[in-house]
Length: 273
Image 1 (cartoon, rainbow, N blue to C red):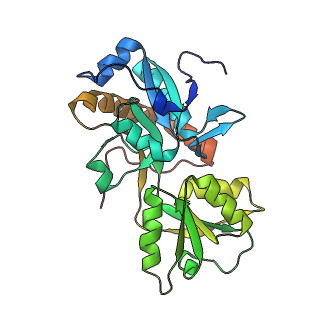
Image 2 (cartoon, helix red, strand yellow):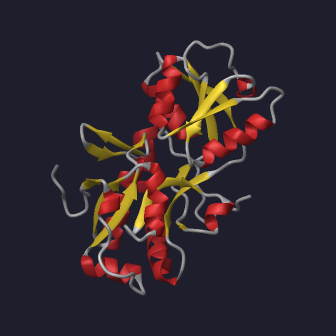
């Protein structure tokens, strides 16, 4: 795959590719000195992150490429299983997570979040033609799945506990496996972010249908860095780039490219429960 001055190279097995040397006092200064930022994600979360014929594409790819332009550096993208992404960040294996990470109060105690880059409110996907599920509450007594380690899984569990009949909650390594089980009839619903579920329904209308309305509190996706003074200037620079992209329309254009619409996103850190 060709790489321009900002297009990143996909590197699999990234846990074996640690950043050399100890952490510097200012990560942004170190990145600019090297001329490269190393960003990790899981490339199985369409339309945010996905591999198309071996090429990394999606909302987060396009947004981060534009951010790298604003920082004046190249970007190297790493492809990891989701279960390795946040631990890899904590271990200093890369500079930042450019996966869409749901902003939660618990995670804010452990990571530094950028400004929101997407809508993470939870919605359900069902099999096309399944009239037994017409609203979220209809999953009572049924099997529903989501991705292990995701905020959406926790919200599904919490929502299921509020229903009159227990939900059989299934956990999957990645969302592709959950949707494969839905297509095969092994679960009756899959829970994840509204953009992802809506994208799947549009891409495969003969197989899937979106259940509306979404459930739970409004949530947002953002990127994450390690906390502390070392990363403060990097997060500030990324936020400045995102605000510039809000103002000049690039952020909206990228969302419209992949979603057909541009969600209303806060330009400051939202309050979280």
